[in-house]
Length: 246
Image (cartoon, rainbow, N blue to C red):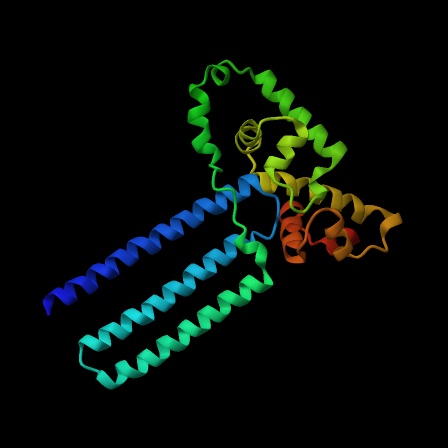
């Protein structure tokens, strides 16, 4: 029946709209994560991206199976059903294993967080934001940097902008704008810069030459060797080992 063809095509258009929307939301989620969290793994984002890709591939196979139904390949269609059932079982097992091995992936990120660029227009409309002086911003930046050097909150691998806000007594929105807009760095990069500086100091300290790179990365707040190497090379253009030997 022509109505069935129409409904099937409509479903596919709906799915395309859905999957594009999911990828756009994931892109925004990654930006929010970088602005508010200092955990270098970004494991939750990676898992959500992987899961979306897996479901996209699975749906594409199902869509191909439906095409076989309508063009008369009955026997191939039956085998395609078996394939789809096997893929569904694989996805279910993969999902459960992820949940068991990485329960933190399902704890989520604070849904009330917004991007700094979405806060700024709102802040600019407020009288206190309009009358804010540049010297006040400079003072806050100096206070923040002094606190980072003296108290070293970046040593906490799971440091968030909310926690730093509580420690330094600056409202979280103001702190987010201060770092992401006035300092022009994501919170993620801002914190990692201090971690790398600390690591550089330890690598050049002859009294700590017995420490391995793995021990150092945990000491300065990282929890992944690959993340540490990537951030270190981004900041110094050298690997940790090459920096120590230079």
